[in-house]
Image (cartoon, rainbow, N blue to C red):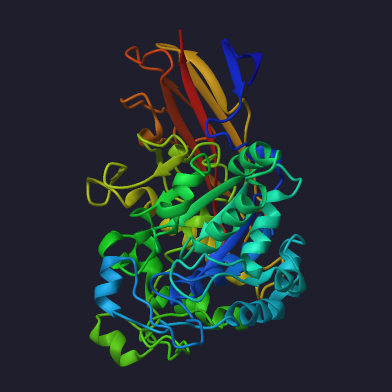
Length: 504
């Protein structure tokens, strides 16, 4: 770490440059990522939204994989029973299970191609359809947890993990971990008995970052954890439900309109081009071939289930890439900071693993309770507005659609301040569309290590202030967010986070 001393007003500020997870977001202009997916309806909806954000990432692979819920079978009639007790009871012996095939990603890339010329009017960094097609691979799909043989998908993951770019590679696990596990096993088999093994082991361990939505097979527990214990893992087991099938039981009433049928019909499903016409909603008449349990498209079934036509179904895997979006919240520096991909804390038993769960809660002002899902739920409205803007990019010119404001600080984003001293905060925003913007400074108390509350003065202005409480101990941190929202349609929000460390 390096330190620079700056004179800020009457305040002596020590700026510390570094990160706490070993993942430096500055080593690569855009996060490198590979998606692995088992092809459930919510994966497909996550994937459609993902395509509209591919300008934000260095996408290096799109890989079909299996899970406890979806596998293709080996084509020989072999019977299989899940290792996961609940799935075994539900399905028993099967030759295959709810398999949607290995063409749907390419088909959706084709529809992305139909709106590509319009998307690049808004950002020339959108990858070409040909580029995306060139990185689609079939991974380990025969059965749940199958990792016995190399596949084109595991070979791609292996090659990326072994390449000469030291930047982190975020491995998104939307289904099972098995294809990633196979890639790691292949690396182990090739190098374990060689003089290179220690170097390769540390290189891969330092490079791979697994963001997994639940454990959908046993390969992480059985192979990855015991053999690659230093690989960083971001494990989302409860917060993702804000964007998954049971969202109506998790999302407060005040935010439910953003997931309702009227909102999706107006902002996403219709009049936004062929890619979003393919987006799956309740009662939309669509049916995934090969998955008999995809019944949400039947309107009668939707009504029986208490759904309105075009209601949101699920994007349970989207938090895996929401986490990678650089919107100014700095959560990639440390998952405990919280951001669009939720808020995770370091495991008490594994320093390389970050988790959510019942003990990781944010205060929900709508229900006036601390809730395990709210670290993700709190962003529903801004995430949905951002999605709606991307949908507009598919059909509108750059002068018609809205684009997010660019937010900056007039001082460092890390401040070292003694207890009892006033902190002067100052920010600004440029809106590319010339919209007016509103400012809001707020304390993200759950991300703090200081346990109390600070009183932010002039919180709705560009310049605000607060006094570091007298009871704040040296080394404790206070997180203050500058939130800026423009007046466009839909309104878009970006941030800057200031972390104040209490000095001696």
